[in-house]
Image 1 (cartoon, rainbow, N blue to C red):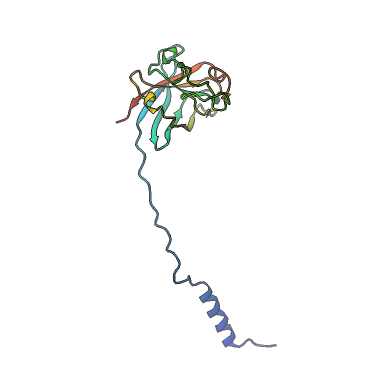
Image 2 (cartoon, rainbow, N blue to C red):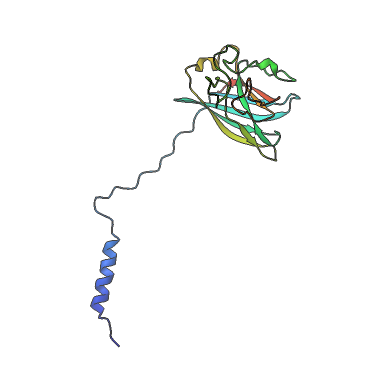
Length: 189
């Protein structure tokens, strides 16, 4: 039986140790930073036609558009079309007081995020999913289209939740169905 000399074992161990030493000019690990929390610009309390709480929407303005954090409650399970409407009122039973989508009634653009004939109008947003427990949590985004002043003009702005999904093409509301919840945006702060 052969014995490995102690010198060979020591040399092997020393070689492994130097292989794990970082290079002298390696970049230091980046410092962890936390960005400040965004400040909301507006909030809307959602209500059903019977006046029951249906959640909240919090709007944040970014450099290229608006992000809306949707926190729904008591919604039927499934996908729901959500839209921005041109008038800041939510009178039941069908919330027709909220008017049409922002800039839709002026005929500026047809409805639909997927409409290839000139859409979308400024009120078009992504669909939101509600679970079996009636809870919905989502963030929807509206790119700045150069018409941001229309959003918070003198007659206000409302957020509507529809009974069905928006197909993002059909006129005038993407087949989204009845308006089941509505909230008027109020400036934050």
